[in-house]
Image (cartoon, rainbow, N blue to C red):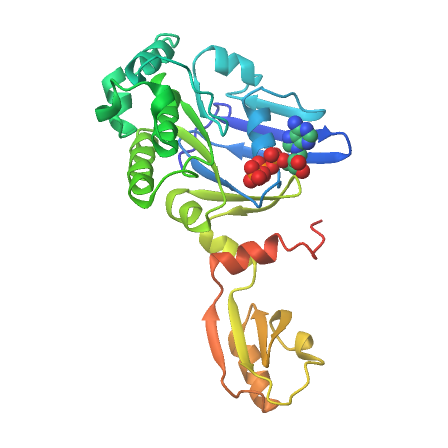
Length: 303
Ligand SMILES: Nc1ncnc2c1ncn2[C@@H]1O[C@H](COP(=O)(O)OP(=O)(O)OP(=O)(O)O)[C@@H](O)[C@H]1O
């Protein structure tokens, strides 16, 4: 992470709220992205990721709170060409070629990158002469990436950038994104894919029901959700009192096995041994999937 003292952060949300009727799509978000950070916004369907991004880009105004880019309202940074965005909805522009579209967008920025470079970074140099309304979903997605890059923005915002991409295109996309980020640019991307967030972001911000429920590295999220999972065959044992054992945060029963999420697996295992409940005992580190499920569990109140 690159900290810049004295300079306002690239992105700053303070108590931002956005409601649609009764739905609090963004429900009091505080978020700060420093210059040069790559941050993943992770959440289930309807968690509020796209609404957060629309506030960030100034496409929507918060009902409460503030959103700033580089210390000013988002539209300033957007108008100054400091922001590039790849949003979910793809509007096909009829008849123009890929090169024409990217050139047109680049021409509206004060300091664009060469069009050939944007096409190359997005992996579509070979599609330059093709009409944009005659491309596959994955190709269209890569054109939108080239459009987002065209202005050489300081802040790149990508809403589910890999949704329509096959495995190979996905790898190529992340390589490009990382090479862009390495040059000191700030990147925010939303995703449903935990592995992608873990592999490609410096920080993961988990959003649930319009709130930030976790913010940290993949490792910190795993720890926050309970470091290890201890499981064993119940073999007739009851589950009463298991949640009171040392380290245990939660107890789940799957068939005849009990699954304990614990912060201190040694202490939990010793206590289980005293109860003679160690048949088929297994201790595994909690995965990021486990962490994500624990953090965004529908049953759990996130306060
Ligand atoms: N224009 C709108 N009018 C009414 N409700 C909306 C609107 N946009 C979003 N919502 C609601 O706000 C909540 C958050 O939606 P949002 O699109 O921000 O979630 P998301 O995390 O991006 O979801 P997904 O992963 O499915 O894209 C949802 O309940 C959604 O139905």
